[in-house]
Each structure stands twice: as C-alpha cells, then as structure tokens.
Length: 487
Image 1: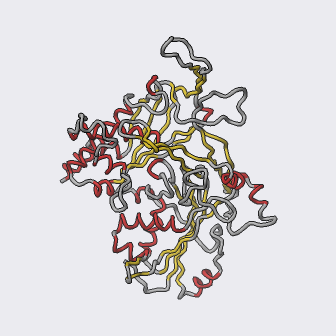
Image 2 (image 1 turned 120 degrees about the vertical axis):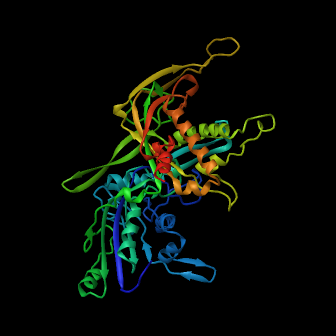
C-alpha cells in the first residue's frame, strides 16, 4: 500500500479535546489511588506518544488488516522487523488561551502555571486528584469481594496538542490516517468502555512536503518545532465522522426520570450554605470553552452533575446476564447456586472478560459519561432514620439526610463495535442471543423495570425513555431483516 517514489513528508498538528474524563495511567499505584495519571515534567497531565500510536495502529488494523498495518506502522517479529512510517509526539496540555505547555517551565515561565486557570487547576490534580470510585459486581448484582478500586482522572474538557508525521505514503493513506481521529474507537487510557477517554478533534492543520521541490523544502525547514504553531501548514476540514463509523453501530439513550434518583456519592460544593446533606449526587469539574473573536478561551466552570457511564453499564450488564441465561436455558439449581461467577459466553463476548494472558478479551459495548447543568435540575432533600428491628422504634443517632434529583432528562451516547463482537462470538446462534438479550435489557431500562443508582429498592432510580440511531435498528432486528431482504 505504501509507495516510496518521492521523498515526501506529511505533517499534521492536531488539537484534541477530552469529551469525557481521561485516565492515561502511569501503570502503578501512587500510594493513595490504584491508578495515577500520567504527567509531564511540570506536573501537568500529558498523553504519551505510545498511547496515541497504539490506538491509531489498532484502529488501522481493524479496518485495513494486519499486512497493511505492518507496512505503515512497522513491526518486529524475532529477527524480522520493519520501520514505522508514522511517528507521533507527546500530546501536551493547552492553557486557557490554547497555547501548548512545552518544555520545563522555570522562573518567570513557571508563573504561567499559577496564573492560568486551566493550568492551575490541572497542576492541583497532583495533590488533590479527581478520582472515580468503582466496584465490580457479581452475577447477583452485589459488590464482589475485593472488587473495590478507584481510578484518578483528568476532568473532561481539557485540550491537548500533538503532531503526526508520515514519511512517504500516498494521499489516500494519509487521509485515511487523519480520518481515524474522528473514529468512535479513538479513545485513550483506561475505562474507555465505561465512559472515560472519549476524544474529538477540535483543530487540524496539515501539509504534504515534497522535498524535491525547493519551495516545499524551504517551508519544511522553516516549520516551527512547537506543536501549537500551525505556520506553514494549512487548515484542514475536520474528518467526517460518518466516514469512520462503517463498522460500528451507535445510538443515543434518551432517559426521563420518573421520580427521585441519585447516582454515586458527591462532595459538598464550596459555596454551599448551611449544613450539606449526608448523601449528595456525585459531581465533577469540567472545562468549558467559548469562542471570542476566533480565539477560544477556557476556564473551569465548576462542578457539574455527573452520570457515570459505569453506573448504567453495570446495571445493563447484570440484566443482560439474566436474559442471556434465560434465552440459553441455563437455569439456577442446587449445583450452580453456589458458583460465584457462572459461565456466560454472551457476557464475555459483549462486555469482555479478565482471564489468563492469552484468553482475556476487551468488551464491545461503549457508553459515555454524561454531564448535567446543576442549575437545570431540581434537588430534593429527604430525611431518613433507621428503625430498630426489635422494638420498632427509631435508633439513636442514625438520623440522616439525602439529597436526590427530582425528574429531569438526559441523553447517554452508546456504541457497539460490531467487528469485535462478530469475532468474539463463535456462532450465529450466539450472536442472535446476544442481540436479543441486550435488546431486552435496554427495553427493561427504557420501560422502567431496571433502576439506576442508589435506593433502588425504595423506588428511586427508575426511568422511561427511548433509544435512537442505527443501534436501535440492530436491537429490534430491523437491520437484520433489511439485510435479508436485500439479499
């Protein structure tokens, strides 16, 4: 696929934004949290080039095959190896004026971190990180023993700049590579299937330099070393999202709360007047951007209400397991009731499985975190107490107050990697069972039979809604019927 007839060098400088929180981990605990966030020499969040290259290589292989991937990204198998034609830089953080933080900032330059609102809040993550509490659920829907863990994250909205270079190649390969920046699978870090790491391309400048032409050679020599300087490059229209989604099914869950609901345990806002409730909806900071005379300026808006994708995915996975077992005729009995995790190939195929080194596999279903404006949602405080089971009276010192949200609507993006699902499913019968079980689990959620969040046994957390998009057609079987009619 790659032709080296000309000494052609292609350069692209990209600005990406984290639509959901980002958790590119150091790979080791930091003594407090199970997964710390990768930072640069200034203590600011950064994305290693290896993370970017790994994701792009994976997406390229999924679309164009192993041979084309080895030709473009290189390979090494024992004594046989090939050089990669694609190279990437680290992605560095942008400040509120969209200037990249490059190199070690010392002296007066170091004051830039303290004076910029985005850099100051990002630097503060080292001492006061934003983190997610997670728990693994069993097939019974309860917390698994030793299933509690946490993950530090970089709040959504942060922007990063990096450079992609490609030696030789064709215009088609180059355009296809840039198109991957808007692929729904372009997600970085951990927890990508539980709402984290979703990225989008905000700015793209690129140019192909034919070094045999004097004008191109001079322009290439004058190219700035800064990844934030697009001089000598040309603004390129952002890749068309539809061109990168042919092998994925995506949709939107539109949920309308039927009453009170609360997901997670939040912390009181600094501006809170009086005593805060003992239990609060979870909130998280997010960076907001606005365009002013062509210059984007960002600032921390404060904490917004958070609907973690993991809370929705966990409930769907539990209900999906029930329907998958039912459709397969696997019933609980005395021999299986004590098994901690009954075998479920449908769950393993759709949601992934952690197993031996050569047996584990990633999931195929992606949901995104959702942020809600706290000013647009009604909060309701409810007093609770504990009743003594023997006397029927109120127990001493167990009066507490819970703050929940009343009603409200929100939309949850959802996507399914059909290529991976087809590869993970052994038979057509198994694939059809997965489709039916997922459709039933989603239907339970949308028709108010599957609750989300806390106090679900007390009537909280029920929703009504709809699902839209191509994924809805696949779930109800209309896509399969259409394909059969076309044949």
